[in-house]
Image (cartoon, rainbow, N blue to C red; front, side, top):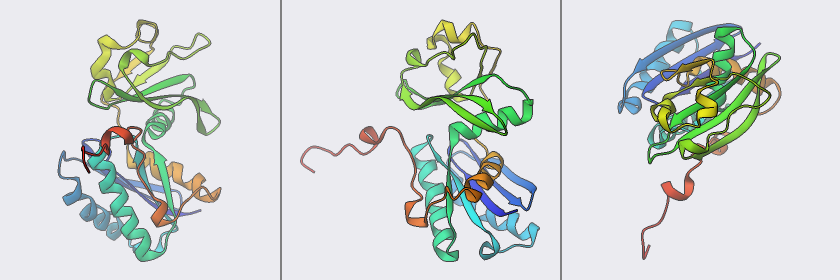
Length: 230
């Protein structure tokens, strides 16, 4: 068993979750542009209600991306600070994989899902997954592309399409949309799924140090392009 605190600020929602030896609790607020202000108070509230201090945790977890550039930096910065202070390992969790994990858990179904997040600039972050035992298996790796380049799952699957990337519904391939079993544009990354996923990551040693807890943007060359003459 383990005690793991997870947080996610990769979308408009700010969520904090605690896995406490098999008991999962979560706080969720839809607070666009207020993540930096609200996240730490939510952490304090959740830990306080559970009677725990950061130093009593076994590990921390966070949504490492892809997602909002600013949001990802906020989560990474908070987790790094907490991890340094308490000397805790960190589990960086894929936001897209967490979406798929939560879907399979809630629906108790098999099949495939395509997770899409609006990446702005007429692009989407996306990946494809299928259920594998009690976890998820990657079918298409994480990437950022125009909506037209999102791949449809194979083998006659009727996938669920999840996430804010459905804002580009009319630009997604017809072979994907017409075969979809369901479309859920409001489905988003959540810290609860990340906390649960982090348990197996922690037990398998798939954790990093505080300094290695970095966001994954998928669009580094765009986000950090230097100005001429710099």
